[in-house]
Image (cartoon, helix red, strand yellow):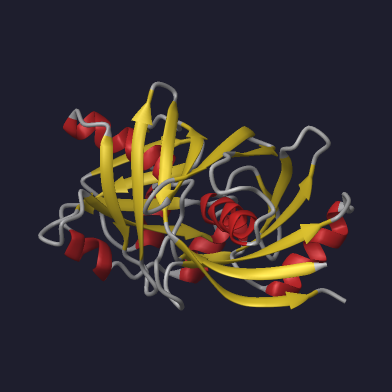
Length: 261
């Protein structure tokens, strides 16, 4: 079985978010896929198998759990299918997933994915979560994707130093932090901390932009954004709201090919 490692939400190698794409000729059991994901030890490993109707089944695993929605590994999977000419460039790709059918389109300068919107609701976040992140936010929100904390500036986002031990002590914790983009030409910046999935910080999180787009649309009245996830690797994400869907876009580059024996 072929394994391809792709850096997603970037146009250059060794940036963005790396994902492994495992191209299967038949369905495999979940424990086996979990073992492969643990072996790859990336934030996500995607497992793709062709369906009789021409679409593809897609599942995502972190090194420790299966997840319901993943942006960068979906982007990586679509990139591999087009790059390896398993799907013609002019055709869209329909992935059947635990979050429904996700359709990917190849645009001139990026891949665009059709994802569900994840509306946010303002809340009073627990004090232990705020303490774990390390700085008091301007406002606190929640959606199906976890907590969302708003800060004043992009510098505040980059300066955050969460306490890993405190984060891991809180069950099922996912926290996205965000602020206006500042002077770099981005509408907003973010970071995403995911101890609930088994890692401290995700380099670039497509699924988080399903709630980020909703939040910034509420703040600005706009529906179209160019964003930057300010992790150590960094990545550029495009997000556009249409009704109850969010179109998440980005580039991808292949960095490694191999075989699973």
